[in-house]
Amino acid sequence: MQLKVLTAVVVGVGLVAALGPSGAATAGGDRHSGQIIKLGRQVLPANDGWAASGPGTTGGSAAASGDVHIVDTRAELIEALGGDNATNRTNATPKIIVIRGTINGFEGLTGRCADLADPAYSLDAYLAAYDPAVWGRVNPSGPLEEARVRSVANQTRYTQINVGPNTTIVGMRGAKLQNLTLMVDSANNVIVRNINFVDAFDCFPAWSPTDGDAGNWNSQFDLMSVRRSVNVWVDHNTFTDGDNPDSGQPIHFGRPYQVHDGSLDITHTASLVTASYNRFVSRDKVMLIGSSNTVGPDVGRLNVTLHHNVFDGTMQRLPRVRFGQVDIYNNYYRLAGDGFSYALGVGVQSSIYAENNYFSLADGIAAEDILFDWGGTVVTEKGNWVRAGSDRPRQVSLLDAYNAAHDPDLGADSGWTPALRHGPVLPAPLVPLAALALAGARL
Image (cartoon, helix red, strand yellow):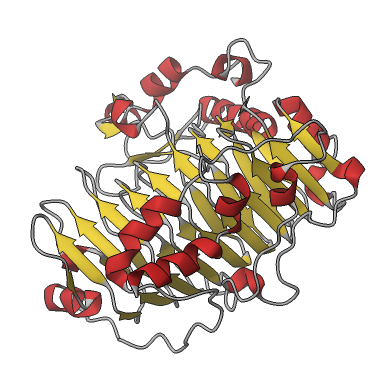
């Protein structure tokens, strides 16, 4: 029975079949041929999560041969997306873009952050001016803060790469998008597959003295962001901070200097997103679904499916959900390390359906820590397994564990049942084997 189930999963994963057992891909002798181009023409399978709703998600599969590009540099990527980073988000021409090697968001800058800093900004001056012992516990303002904001705008223009509708971006073996944000904003029908997203760090974090009891540094740039878009498929990617982990950042004003934001954030009325077979490794903030508690345009949106993803050494937002109907099934959570906060954030008017996930918990983390109440009221969960420390794995009601340790209780019925699932739903004990074997960019 286990072999049959796993075989069905493998057969259903087009990327594994296209890349072959070794994960290798080649464009062959012609830049518009070979297995990687076949992969670029794959569409989201029918019923594969929320992104299969409506017209489904086809990305750039219909691209003419002249709109299939293999790119090696930031400049080539921007050219393939339409030619002008400021307007590429409106370029709806079907296109397939193959990433080869490493593309760095700071390409062409000799001083990286220094080249993007406003002349009136320096970190040393910022730290001296807004030290709480000097400035107090109020938000920074004045010319130096304005210079920081201008610096952030400079970085946004340079390292945020804008994607338009009807686009497929797929990576060859080992492809990386490093030190940049892939921004899918007002761009429907987008597919992103087989990319290593690495270290989208913010050169100019903001000090927020009223964020929490001690204040916090906050950064702006996600590795990938989906906003105001529908029908988006994010599949077989890996999201990491590379050799620039949060643990290596300095302490300023008694708080970690946070240069990273989310891995894959889905916000600002985005909806109909499927994230499948991705790896999120050793990151703090992973996935925010909905960015505001304000009841308004997000209501009825933010519908997302997460399946067969691996969350490895991640700390929070796995995901944190507001408003949306979010189907979370067959994901593997390997949770460890100082700083772990929670896995599933139950936010305002959220409707999470969590089924047959597997949670491996390091010492010090318990089943009652998996859920966190961010102003929500209900969560549906069933068939989830937990292995705490060296204990034997067992099926656990995450909701019962949470309610036994916290007040007020969360309700047990989120009011819907997922109808869009492709292939068999694995029993939770098989999830680690399947997810670890198949998730992430093929190296």
